[in-house]
Image: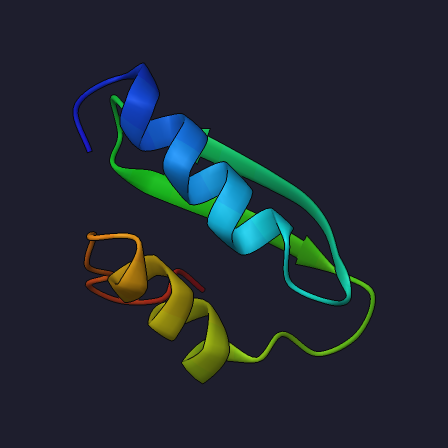
Length: 61
């Protein structure tokens, strides 16, 4: 992720998922914080990020 377009694309892709309450993309840090109504579906989040043309490299604790 390097620009505002990256931020918008990931925010929209992840934000459109059911149970997602908020998405915070930090382009400079290369991190995405996702708040969900229940347990997050990591596989689904990874899939929509991949489908948007980006790659998740791990999950922060």
